[in-house]
Image (cartoon, rainbow over all chains, first blue to last red):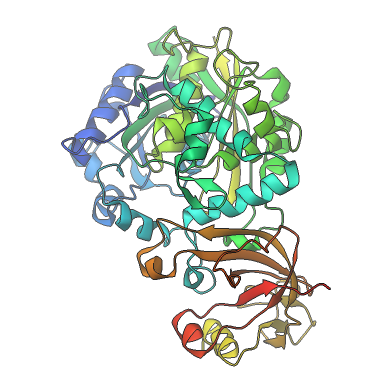
Length: 396
Length: 132
């Protein structure tokens, strides 16, 4: 099986605008973003050895098509591609996809892997999606009968975080404002052109105390893709900067939210320690972070566990502007999920792709981080059941 | 009988039980197929004291799952029982229908719902503990 140890690298990325695009069909978006990533990589579709798909959550039927190789036919890969598979860990899917794509490339199982994600959350029925989500990470016997749902999960974590950190409702709201400022610099963001203030957030309806409606993610349609290959193959194609995974770490802490022992910490410190040890560098040596943010508290807890802010300080530092455009340390430079749009498993993908884009020096000028060489990527799925960390590095 | 059925029948009798390992005596929640201390399958139930600490809480006021539209607003809390195990609970509202008496780390006590309610929603209910 394993022949040589290759260095896996990110070579190409693709992303469609997030938002409400009812006329953009699922397969049109999926093939468009796949071809976009392949063109970006300078590859023909037939050079893909393995196809790894993120699930779509808007339709079980579309998801089944992906599992059973619909994309192989639609991209003309019949007979040339070695394997078609789906990887699913909820919001951390993109991190696990990158980790697994890198592993098969490193061992020689595949030379080139195409990873594709598409979802139509924005065009789906909102109430149907709220109901569907209660079947994705909420225990049916123990929590669903009580009325548990994802906004309540976000609220329960927010309440505990505020209790332990002393962060105020205004501090939590400022996280949304920082992300909205970044989204103004991203043409693909769902909330570009829609400014937001702390007062706007605090005036919005309370959905689940202490969480306001403008602190809840807005579902969007979206499509994301990336191509990974061996450094050797990539160097034969381009002189552009490449991106490698310098370190990774992960901890799975729970399935049921109420079984989490440390609600204001989650699995981040353990995952971060593993990743920094492997990379040989720490948070202070990175130039930015792109971290899962389906609620403000999710980002605050992660930023602390990743060692970017001291324990209990992340929300206050967001309020001070430290992580906004022009601040001390850029976080979620695409606007994140809260202002980029929650495009299901593409929320994490978009953050990962943004990290790759920044390290390649190919972000639009108004948000390109000068001298970006190292970036932190964090993801988490289900009821924030796991913490996954990828540390990315530019390879010139 | 499933673990959930056993647990719900105890709730219907107004009792809160946690899973007890007959081999090593460990108590755990949620109920599992195996004791997570010694991995025995010889598991039974132990009645809980009903006293605990509220780790966090929320009041769902909008956008609930469809089946819970009539319940809004409703209180949810994560309770750490004095025996150690944790569980998600519904919170009993005050006389005004609100939830102002709950605090993170506040003392709470099992307050079983009445028959029709427990039949409708087979979950544990908790209320603020009288700490006078």
